[in-house]
Image (cartoon, rainbow, N blue to C red; front, top):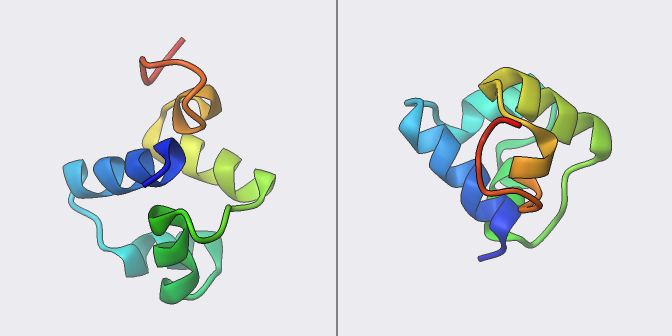
Length: 71
């Protein structure tokens, strides 16, 4: 699993959400969101920003550029 997918999954589980919840937030199918977590597809930049804002973490953290959730 890639860093982005792993962090998406970890954040979702830690915060008690289901894949369907994030799929609704991003206006994608549950399958499409599941593919993000599996590393089979990558979310758009707009989706990455929405996810970062939703979890209150930096996009750099989601992308694996830094190891702390916030700068």
